[in-house]
Amino acid sequence: MAIKDLIYGSDVDMVAEQELFRKASEIKTLLETERGRKALSGIFTKDDKFLELFLGESTRTDLTFTNAVEELGGRLHPRLWKFSSMAKGEPMSSLTHFCEGVRYQGLIMRHDGEEAEALMREALATRNKKNYQIRFINAGMGNKEHPLQKLKDTFTIQELFSNELLHGPQTNNPLRILFCGDVAYSRTIHSLLAVGGIAQYGAKIWMTSPEDNQLPDSIRQALLKHRVEFSELHVPLKDAIESAQPHILYLSRFQFNLRKEWGGRSQEEKNKYEAWYANMVGVTQEVLNIAPPFMKILHPLPQGPELPKRVEDNSRAAYNQQQGNGVPIAMALLIMMFAPNTDLHLLHQDKHVVTVHARTDGGTFSMPSEIGNISRLCICQGGCGNHTGQCTAVESKISGTWGFVSENDFQSITGKGKVFCPQCRPH
Ligand SMILES: [Zn+2]
Ligand SMILES: [Zn+2]
Image (cartoon, rainbow, N blue to C red; front, side, top):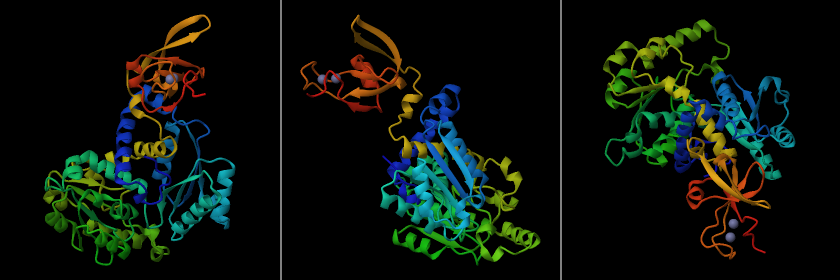
């Protein structure tokens, strides 16, 4: 399952998403041990170079990608938009030519402005027209989508409520999720609501927000078109929780930075609005008192007054777990996009040594080899006349020579490329 670019949440379908989640779980395990981290760091080489262009504030997303690329052994060059030539009006097409010229594998882009989507499309169009190799990752695009956050959030929800998410519709207990806060501007909420979001699992959706904070009509129409069950409320959070009895409460802060009309306002005005907002759609003590015990709280962070510090100690707080999933999810994404043949399962098998028998002029000798040091397998199933059944030749990554392993060992090696070995190669 390959992912070419990640621009919209729907670029990763449900099958790919589940594969990505399996990888992320394996990566989490691997990251816990030194040996696992070492294995992960060999997936990329220094030729796996990425340019990260940030056109908006985001320490978290930036650090997530920096760590993900580094853990995989690749290189990431972060650049702030305001220091780049793009800020001087250089078109996206010219940047795309540049990236291809210096062999960046991927361009990771975040842009908070309204023109974000158009810029992304310009880059894609240039790539497609010129048949370039460069691939694109959207790390936050205006008030539109933030697909990486969607993957991270859905993965966290699956860790918390796998039965409800994956089997809920069949067992009449679908996942109930209540979105609360800035439904007009929160792109993390928009990404979960968009096509390819949480609704594809049959989740039941509630939203509550202040009256003047409305879901964009394009998203509402898409939900209606796909016959998603959802309720839009404009009531205080505690009332919404009472009607929804949600498994997941998904909060968001008020997005001052994405709203032009708040540009020139004073900090005092902002604080005053935030206090009102927190009272309406924030986690107050009253909210905690009436919330069902099984409910978990997610928040894309950083939090505002809608999510007071003290909530962290409540058993319902799951946003630190959610945040911790950022790096493994980004790593799983990068692997699926840029190293799709990587078999993580093999990386964390403890017994991954096989015995390779090699014929040389001096006779046959045998030596142990880690499966990681085998590059390819022979594909021949007999037609060459040299053997019956599957040929069990394997190629060494280190010496480039071919040897043989036992049938059992051969079966245990997966995720490698297959070609005819020199013995079997058709003439
Ligand atoms: Zn062969
Ligand atoms: Zn053969």
